[in-house]
Image 1 (cartoon, rainbow, N blue to C red):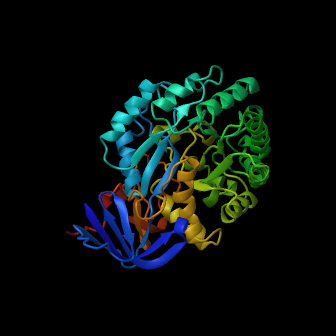
Image 2 (cartoon, rainbow, N blue to C red):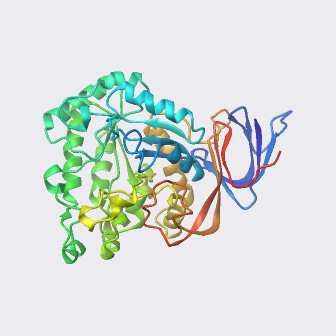
Image 3 (cartoon, helix red, strand yellow):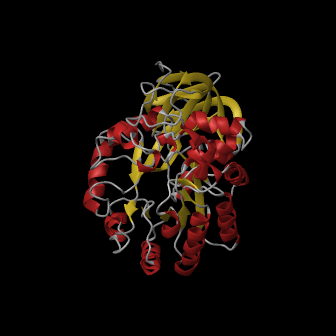
Amino acid sequence: MTIRIRGGRVIDPANERDEICDVFVDHGRIAAIGRAPRGFNAEWVIDAAGLVVCPGFVELGARMREPGFEHKATIASEARAAAANGFTTIVCTPDTQPVMDTPAVAEHVNQRAARTRAARVRYLGALTVGLEGKVLAEMQALKDGGCVGVTNVERAIVDTTVLRNALAYAATAGLTVFLQSEDHWLGRQGAMHEGATSTRLGVAGIPGAAETIAIQRDIALVAETGVTAHFCRLSSAASVKVIADARKAGLPVSADVGIMNLCFTDEDVDGYDANLHVRPPLRSERDRAGLGLGVKRGQIDAICPYHEPHDADAKAAPFMLTEAGASTLDAFLPALLECAERGLFDLPAAIRAASVAPHRVLGQTGGDLSPGQPADICVFNPRAEWTASAAALASAGKNSPWLGRKLTGKVMMTIVDGRIVHDGLDARR
């Protein structure tokens, strides 16, 4: 179809564009910005006055829960939730049941995703068989099956020889390795950041050194193997400097931060809210400020939801015994806008980190509104206020730390490959 998005504030960080203008879409691609192409006849006209028009968001590590954990969520439910919240691409992790360590499991995900007609679904393959950290997965077969990278998620590979061999294999296969670095021995018994709050609450802590030590080890192996590595979910300000130094040394590394670590600190856990039990943990105010500065300076590439939907039982226990993770898709845009409002970084930087940068991490073009690019577009109202309730969340996971809070910012329309997959504006012909 042909679409005209009229009169919105177009923020396209890749092209340094921030202005009020029109966007034209033709046969799934951006046809023009500003002036309509000759002979263009819009089948759909979207009035975006007072709204922001930007590239669609990308999630680099969502738990889609299918196959194996459909009582928490499904590929269909979370792909639809992603579309309702401005995400045009969502990458799922391999910690399913069975683990996504063979092309057969990946094919199941592909087939299920193709039926949703919502956000585009991609996936990461397992770095080791069963994510057990012992035997290397068949990474070349996973790549041939369509995986966009490999990871062991948060499950530490304790044997450094296995990790070194895995990184070398990934390098040979031309795959990016997504690393969530945490020292196994320092982190295995903890449930939150080690500090004054964990001591007061009597909850076993995870020191910031658990992350920085593991990242330093992993960077040494990256240098030796030549693999392209993406460091996921940085939580410590000290980690930002380690990544920045590795880049200065010319190593092929990138990094991201989860939205939770930009919005909350360990002090917020004071009431034992199980929805704030996440991994890596929420750290100090100093860490939060350092992470925000890392985004502002471009030392951290991307900001991601790291969406982990859970059923009610997973969070119905004492804090340390609950399952880690939060449902974050629905609050992602308001949280991003709040970070910009607080001055951690400006709005164009926030949009760049949520759209352009994740595409680059995946080694793909996209994430911009250049003519000829796929029409992956998010239209949002930066002033719309709403209250986060279980009924208001599009995700099947209701384990959100924002429940009961008044939020500002709402996605009004999402377009994927020129198809309107979420319409809160009642687009007219």
